[in-house]
Structure formats: C-alpha cells, structure tokens
Image (cartoon, rainbow over all chains, first blue to last red; front, side, top):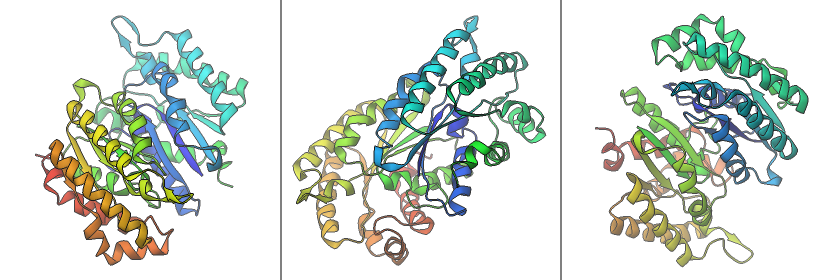
Length: 195
Length: 195
C-alpha cells in the first residue's frame, strides 16, 4: 500500500524532533503490524486549501500509479483561518469550495480519508477553525469520505496544549504528535485500510 | 533551515520499518544537535533522472520560499540503469544531461548537495550505475557542488549487502539506511551546513 499524506505543517510534522509527525508514527505502527506501507509525506508549511488544491493532484499522480494500491489522506484547515492584513488568508466560502473540489476529484481516483485540524494557542483562530471544520465534516459526509475530528479531543489534551504552548504556539513536539497518531489509529476510517 | 531531499526510493526510505530512511535519520541527528530543521522528503519510487528533472523545481519551489533558508539534496541514478525491454530505462548520455541540467538550475537557486547511489544485488546493473556515478561526480566537480560517493563504501558493508539480499534485492532495512546516514554525517559537505 502506498499512502500520500497531503496537507500543512501538521502533516509535515513540524516541531517533531523525531521527524515522523503523526503520519510517520501511524505508518511505523502499521509496518510493525506487518503491513507493507510506502510512506509519502506531502505536508507543506503555511499551506492553505488553495495551495493544496493547486498542487495535490500532480504530486500524488507521480507517486501513485494505477498499479500501486495508492491511497490518500488529507489534513489541513488551520492556515486558512489565520488573519493577515485584517482578514483570514482564505475566505470561509472559498475554503469550503476548495475542500469540496479537492475531495470530489480525489475520491474518484483513490481511496481517501480526511483528518481534521488541531487547535493551536490562539482562541479566536480556534473558533474560526472549528467553524470551518464543521463544514469539512459535512463535505466528507456528502462525498462519502471518512472524516476524523481531532480538534475536540486535542482541546482536552494537556499533553497537546502544553507542548504547543511551550514550543511555538501552534506545533507540538513528539508527545503531541503521538496524541494525534493515537486518535487516528483508534479510528475506524484508518483501521478499515488495515484489514 | 528547510531541506528538500529529492530522489528515488532510497531517498524515500523504502523498506525502512522506521519510516525515516537515511534522510530522516540525518535530520533527527541534526535536531538532536540543536539545529532547527524542517524535513521535506521528496523521494519517489522508480524515478529516473528524467522523472526528477520534470518535477523537482515545482515541488521544491512551493516548499522553499526565498525567506526560508532553503536547501536541496539530490540523490538518484539507480533507476536510470535498470534494463527494461532490452535497454536501460534512460540512455547513458541522457542521464548525464538530465543531471547536468538539474544541478545547473538548482545551484543558481539554492545551496545544493549531491549524494550518489548505492549498490544493489545485481552485479551487471551495479557496473552500469558505477559508470554513471563517475559522470555525476564529474558534473558536480564542474558545477562546484559537493558530491558524496556512497557506492564504494556500501559495496564493502556486510550490513548493507546482507539486508538488501534478505529484503528485495535493492533496498535495505533500518541498519542499511543507518549506514548511509553515517556516511553522510561524516561528510564535509553535510557538515558544512551544520555550523
């Protein structure tokens, strides 16, 4: 199985001294369980849904040829809701439209999963992100894609909140990424790929 | 520092149960030394110099903006010399021309390093690869890019040869990738980035 993880710095694993992030951690665990996984990390720092819409298909296409049992996991959203020059980097409606387009195209080509975005240290941005994630969840429901909410459980995770606060206000270190990995590994969407 | 590693399955770390490969291992070590490294792994299985020429600049450009202290490490070659339908996948002269073009463009935009390709289990292909790598080394010399030979030391490494033989004839497991990581970490080219 070859899996492309597409998204932002949280997919990249920015801040993780072990250079795995949650994506690498779940692939290591899958390999330990005996699955043959090729791991493609396509997380890019600062990227919004617009950036991802522009690049995902080209980057995935050269990594997953039709013979490969290729699969795709998306995770993004936080950078859309960052304020720059008095407005969010991406307008709310545009974010939802970008995401709908990405997912509609993706699900026609590959098995797809979507993992939501985590909370950061900024309460106002978190409120905007949570509102956007509700839309993402609805889009996934409508396009028949498994969606995992990580926002709510991470808001209750002292490990997550403390590491993010101690590091750069957005990214955790190893233990915080392990928290996301645990959520994904306990999720029926991910488990349905490992059977 | 943000580093893009561009290449083939050996850059991807295919076969490594720890999902790090040599690229992840050297970035973990750099972080342990206190360097702030963002790790972008852009290794793609089966890719030749022609495939890499076609995609590297676009993939790197969206990851390394001018403000980012972005750097690029290339490593490829083995797939060029694979025989398919009675000839090598890429003609020898075309391989060298692709590589020259990639490196000439890259060095105008980023600090660049090049790591050679490893031996696999096939002696005839190894002979072709070694001949191609001599050209790569000459191109690096001419374009003033640090080049690291890993082929010769890995041919003498029992760890490498044994893991490759026991796995799929081309890729090692964790210990083999650690061998490459050790070679790169002891190399003045890599060390010059960590000062």
